Length: 324
Image (cartoon, rainbow, N blue to C red; front, top):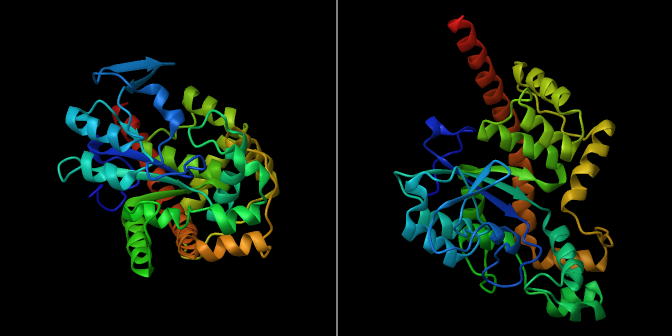
């Protein structure tokens, strides 16, 4: 119910964007809320608050309780918010949106095994998290994966609306794939800069001539964003059906590393094929299949998003020329 097929742009500004970060390394229960996002909420009314020229509606859509409160207050029909952050997109879609109030989902996905390994190391030291687990310091990753971890097939469960402790099967995977394909604009944490660029296109804020947009992109990704935009425009204008080569170039790797430092927790890496990797992969096999599908969809959406961005810019130029 959360909108129709992604249009790669807000339709006459009548849609609200829902951003879903599929990471939740700090989560360890069925609520899976994002504690960091709550600083912008928790009040007894739905007035707007502003910070750094940005406005926030003080309802907490990172928890089911907060989503229900937002529903009672009429958050979506009020049009007070252009974008909603939630880690429970299934619950949010059921309670905030309907046929008269649609949304477009932007979702940032992380490789499932990498997410679990990061969670194991992160919660050992994250004293500020409600899911802090100091006892994990005394066990190996293999022991944790075999005897402790109950966070399995997280992606599939989240998308089909099942709780963390519930079981999922092939039927749930098929439903999850269909939902993602029909309603999600996907991004990958392993390709953060390109993902953010695509989200900006969908949001209509990808104009590199805008000082605020350029400054934000340069802060996180370096100063080659404008050149990247030109390259994307050239690629979008090519009349070809050949698949794009998505291999990351050497001169992009530094920018990618710069972006990752803003949202990373240093920890040992786990090699594919190791005992730790194998046990986690076995118990998260549905998530791995879904993630492979998401990566394929990510490549497929690139051409459509670039085409939309190019057409929108061409229309803007034509409108300016018509007024002159």
